[in-house]
Image (cartoon, rainbow, N blue to C red):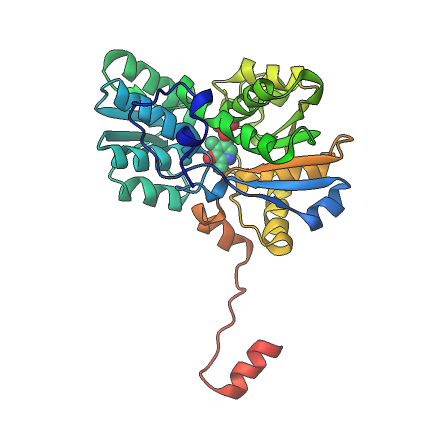
Length: 341
Ligand SMILES: *Cc1c(COP(=O)(O)O)cnc(C)c1O
């Protein structure tokens, strides 16, 4: 399958001869979730964004941001990241032959994401501060140096991320009542809403149901959170850069923004893995936790965006299932006992 710039070029700001840096991102599956649908009382479909090349939706925006950076003659890119933007930026920079630096909150990034950024040769800088401080500092850095900023404040990221909404509409038409999505820096909910607005008439647009982690829910409280805390490290953000855009998406779509606790997030995370056979990362499970806790708000059909793959964060997964591995001596009788017990 072609990458998404090729798939949607006529709606994206790239002309025929422009450089394209692609890893074959986009065109992710929309999978029915029968067990979840039964619990929620609505038809729920899961958009598996963890199947993008680096394992998260960030690749949609990154193919556009990095292609544009190459077109502009940039030699280096930089981002602040809770992990997935770093992994994606590092991969696309490697592909394009650009230098890449990623600024992450020290000790707060999932190990899979760190491994990716390092393997792709990015300069990984662990800041003794949270994401919000990192983003503010990086914005000052790029004001002084000729380095392209590839956070979702970069409009090319928004251009690319709209394609997920178009894929859903390509598949379902306007037979969609609501979109459930986790919200961190609020770029993705903004991009989906822009995408829907562009291809659906007003009366056919889905309601945007955004979910934040209770310990990092500035949009729910209506005020920044100085020390955001949650097990869902990808959405551990206290002062979203796309604050107004996200609130506009929620308000103009007749949607809502709600909080879910870490316990609810982890329960949804286990439910998806154990009952639907789908392993997403904790932040992604926030959207499912939200549907389970708050219902589908009268929607008949809901798409739930699973933003990142479960393999990103093996520590959190293993902490959910500790002591579950059964040791066994290499003898048939022992094996029988172990298997059949
Ligand atoms: C980045 C990210 C989010 C949050 O997206 P925003 O655009 O920052 O709101 C949610 N889940 C995962 C897995 C992410 O990587």
